[in-house]
Image (cartoon, rainbow, N blue to C red; front, side):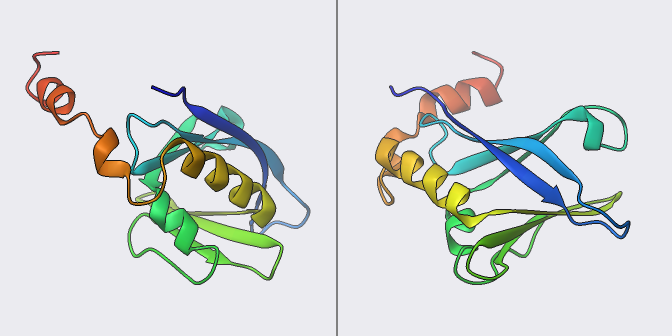
Amino acid sequence: MPAAIDHAVQVRLLATTPGPHTVPAVLRYHPSDPLAVRMSFPPEISLDGAAVDWAFARELLAEGLHAPAGRGDVRVRPAGPERTVMEFHADEGVAMVQLRTADVRRFLARSYAAVPAGQEPAHLDVDRGLAALFGAA
């Protein structure tokens, strides 16, 4: 099975305070979890000082490049031809980041090379997932 795909990106925090707040983040895709993408943020941008990881559908990220997508905790929308905005909704509030659309497209291309769109079910390990769910793994 192919290894995880990590793609380092720079995100710009969209905040009410003036000035750019650019921080590193990582987009991650693993073929063993073919429907999901994860985005990890460093501890310095969280309220409690811990690293922050969000999981969401790969399809959501792809759709959000063309039109607003998502209704839940993660929402993605284009912000002109070169930028994409992601919103992360939690009980504590909403965090918004902006990243280069080209970075997202490169990441998605790498993920589709590992698991083509529509082929995700062939990569699901249902037995291992059930075993983990029931504590047998």
